[in-house]
Length: 134
Length: 192
Image (cartoon, rainbow over all chains, first blue to last red):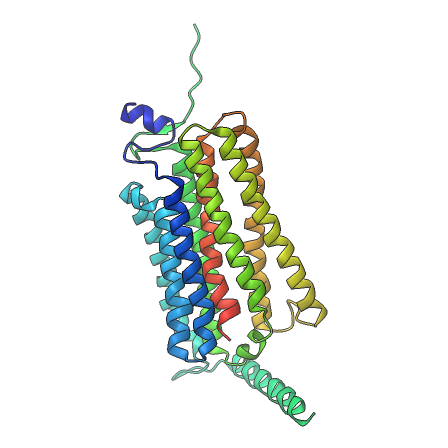
């Protein structure tokens, strides 16, 4: 099949067919990683939770994108497109996060957010105290 | 004199079939939608320590069960693609229906989970955490429904060995739904 014909039929010329066992193996790895991501946070250590829950999520997402979505054999520009929009999200993060995560700065104060935190902490503190008294 | 009707099935400059090209652009927009939503959630969560108390009420086992269901349905979706590549439309359709079964199971779990939470008073208006929880999981659920619907349409054609290239497209979309859940699970269920 020529490259042109291959593209018309929906499969790039550089695409190759993996046997089903390959995908089952990837699924097996994903399942093991999932088990670790659930068990890790049960230890109650913050660093372990971050590494197992969020670090492993990135590895799992990579495996799905690379081997199930076949991003590893797509045209390079497709990968750049998806990474480009992800970079836009990061730009959004760095632009907005400082003002959202902090509730006051040098010349400003987010009174509503501060009050929301105080209300929430007080409500949960009261609930916890009530639960402890029982 | 007659003219052949132009059919835009190929974008030679991009080197991709039109369907796949459109799909990657769709996915790019989804990355922005869910990326923006999850980034907003994380920054709010870090700025609101009281959300941790609300997060304690989410059920890890429902979230974990749904993660396994979606991972497994991704496997059946990629096996459908593999079958389509070998020209076996009937087998591809069977795998797609299996994937749809996974989607249905996921939604049933979600309905049971949400019913319990709502009955305990954890509604969308209870707090900022619960607003994000229902918005993010709800938007994801809508994508599950959309993906399952698209897969059913594609499966009907695939069973007749027609439009087999669409099996790949709907599969790629389904994997994105899986990837989004891979991040939603630790954010909403694990980070207490």
